[in-house]
Amino acid sequence: MNPAGSAPYGGDPPVPAQGSAVRYIGLMSGTSLDGIDGVVAEVSAAHPLRVTHHRALPFSPELRSELLALNAAGDDELHRAALAGNALSRRYADAVAALLADAGLAPSAIRAIGAHGQTVRHRPQEFDGTGYTLQLQNPSLLAERTGIPVVADFRSRDLAAGGQGAPLVPAFHAQVFGRPGRTVGVLNLGGIANLSVLAADGRIAGFDCGPGNVLLDHWCRAHTGAPFDRDGAWAAGGRALPELLARLRADPYFGRQPPKSTGRDLFHADWLDARLASHGAAVAPVDVQATLAALTATACADDVRRHAPGCASLVVCGGGALNGELMRRLQRALPEATVESSDRHGLPPLQVEAAAFAWLAHRMLQGLPGSLPEVTGARGPRVLGALYPA
Image 1 (spheres, rainbow, N blue to C red):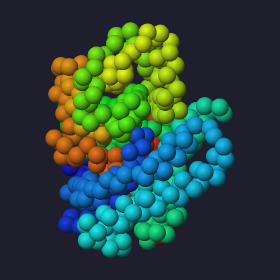
Image 2 (image 1 turned 180 degrees about the vertical axis):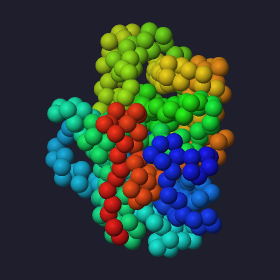
Image 3 (image 1 turned 90 degrees about the vertical axis):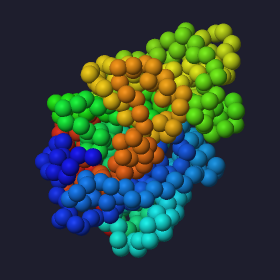
Image 4 (image 1 turned 120 degrees about the vertical axis):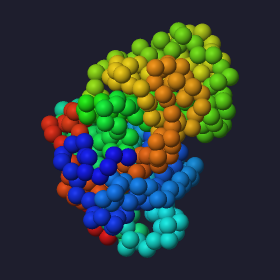
């Protein structure tokens, strides 16, 4: 980690006096819809952020199914979305209770919870020039059930300032993975893949590359019944099909210049089915899985080469960092770089995004910006999030 006081933008953030630490909880449930990752993290003069405890809680099949359905238009959406937000916040509260028990802490020991919510729509700058982004949850209910202040709604202020509202993690990545004088890429392989470029000269860039695990998980669940392809073993047994890969890569999103962000609004089951149908020839399901792994790996590797020239280190986090086949494909596509899990850099891959939202909650309570306009395209840096007191 960079030493405290080496903030990459916006001046040096205030931190507690030497020897003291302020604790936060960060909660993240991502596009993969596999459940909740939560962390207890400390901010101190010695560390911009240090994770002390981590818990992962799965979604019930019913909650996962409803959150997935709410990514598309349907009957009685407002009613269903409100109830799903309540259910998610109750599950968030379960994660908080588990973390407090693990750490032996009372709620009063936590300054705030940074809760991302569950993204079900992300349409920045569309329709009326501002667009919208929607993360389901009920922060008031979470504050009531935990007795801890909650910081939520991190993305909408950046949209209001003309930005994409995503990705929001590059500034945090710079704090924990940046190396002065060295270009480092940080690739988060969640449901959607996003890349942070930490340039040797101190510049920071970031954007969504395209699908990470979202299509891989969908295809695996549909054809094997398993929620994901453990270690990429199924994909490793197939053959990536060049013509199908080219058809997938032909989507205009991959050629767009940053700032850009995406989600299930674009990369969903119907998107894949349409391209399989236009491909014509029958394809073995295992070869589709191998081709989807190649799609994620090649799209991300191309973006590293295009936007992070001279990158010698690619740090991978998110669930995709546990997929051996994806990691091998990335390494083959980027022979000039060392591709390795964020675990080798002090923060396990399933903790990174939750830790980022603990850090963003700290930034908000200090009145400091959490966004980077060079990443999101907003008119300037903004303080992100809204506070729901306990």
